[in-house]
Length: 291
Image (cartoon, rainbow, N blue to C red; front, side, top):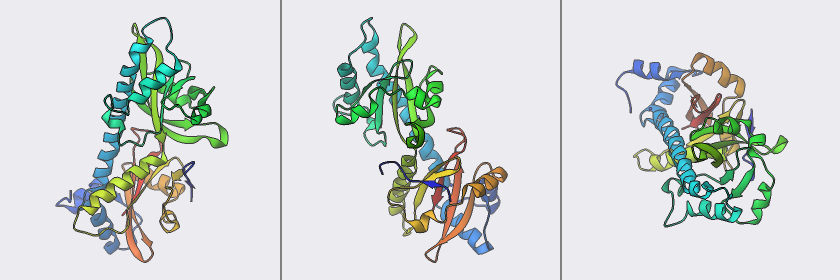
């Protein structure tokens, strides 16, 4: 089992053929379990709902980081560089009335910084002792993926790392250039730990399930990247133990690149597990969803 703890903490179709063509079902022990897995995940449109949630979330945060960059741009229009205090104040205002950026209000974002064009941290949004954690840091050196994203010259997202060595953690970054006279002079960056994407999906799918007629006892979602899947702070071992391991995921995704559904039992209860890849976000990134 390949798993990592976070640091510090489809509308029912009218044809089974359509279902099977849309998302492959593998690893089931019987026809009954196959039907149960399909029903659990497709009657409520869970798989397609998760695809939409992830896509909408990334689009929302790309738009948000562009708005952050727009707020910062006036500070970079003179030859005199802005002070750290000016930058911090402008960043902090993006999450407070009356200048709040709504996309950041209920957001998993836990990092908001301004970088120079070499990746050095110029300022963070918080004036706390935690800022010392970023003193002298260069995020492009820690995450070359972030440098490559910045060099695209437009607001975008990328999965990279935050930190160095054994302390480095997978991180979802959103970056937008800050320009003067058509040239990038700095970068606005927001982001959050990869595990939070699984946590966000878990909470959202539970909220939506509570509005339905059926009582759903098991709903969990975990982000995975490569061989690792990222546990949630409160995910039980009984759930974690039935997650398909990395070798199984690779083999089944090789046969079913759009994702697949399989079965498991948790405390004598049948559950369906969907492995949902998002190659448009990052190679080997996806969501493992249990219901």
